[in-house]
Length: 340
Image (cartoon, rainbow, N blue to C red):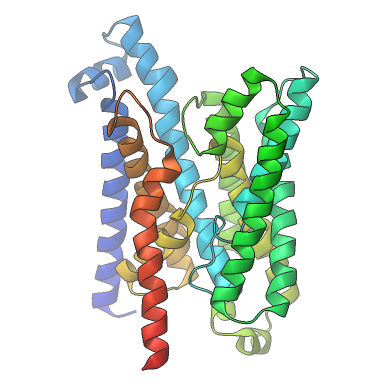
């Protein structure tokens, strides 16, 4: 690797890490109750601060910011895996209907268990979301064999998404009033109400999945060069595809289980990160996409909380504002490249 490229990668990682730290601190300090950095440090060290201040920091803002960091990174990484899998620049959990499938099964499980007054654990939610994500992914894979072309695959994904959303809406209609409020907020996408227990579960699931993604980084690099090249260098394509489907579904499921569906992050962030680094090499892209997704979601969640305070916007509303133009730009550029 030449000196210039090495320098570029180091600077890009430093920039992403600094952005994550900056927005993480902003998310903790800003809100309906402003907390200065010095106050935050004093509470952190346990030196002073009222009980209210401690509760706001430790029980509300810290777990929420940690959850946004972890889930944002997981979502961007899921998008990168799906784009690599389909060799398609606008494949992503939200666009392909995978998030909607996960949302549908989580809604079904929540209503069924709540109706029987059974407590729904974080693990139940992830398991339900994973089953829904795999179900949607199965349909997308079946359709992708029949339809050739980027736009048709996206159309199929959108239709699957609409079908799953319709089933979810139908299910919500039959829920109790108290359940409907929770489900409605969650189904629009929100990071509110995160607990340290949630953070522990999502950290364990996402960390394990990311480690497995690193494990397939080398064959993933060969797969990017095309199926023929990958097969020639000894990559087991069938196994690799199964791994990508499972890992991307697991990451997508984790986000939907805790925060509901979040749009456009999975498509926009991998592209912005590739532009920043000037490469699509998996060993660099895996950590870079994670940091990029964390930055993007921390920034969007900060806006969702503070822009129209005390009203909180749904996270998908804000991510769509910043993510959708990137997706449009990708599609227009692809069309322009084809004509040249």
